[in-house]
Image 1: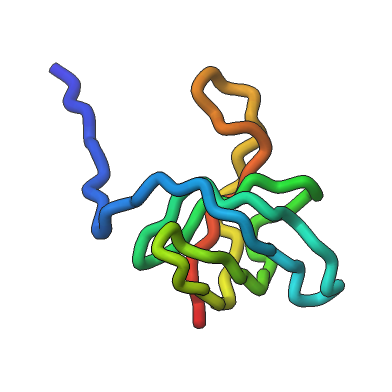
Image 2 (image 1 turned 120 degrees about the horizontal axis):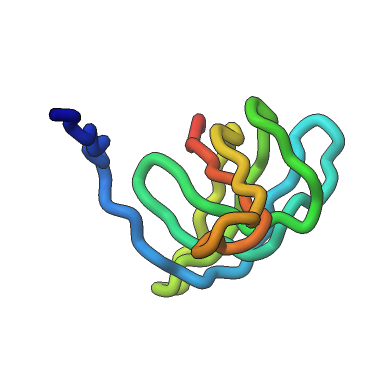
Length: 97
């Protein structure tokens, strides 16, 4: 009998549709402007430019409450958008500062 291991999420993700900017820290080039979900540990950004794991980003976006949030983060996952249910080309970003 095989068992399926389901990872336990440490924080709750909140689906948002927020506008802002995700900017590559090295090139200071815009990567994306739509934030799809946010948690205390990171966010999911719809990307208009290519990204790779380990890339450092500067993030700035307004939460639905009107509060602006500024942070630095690292791309930890790239979603190519090929699978059914994917939000399109996007990056999972872990907040570092």
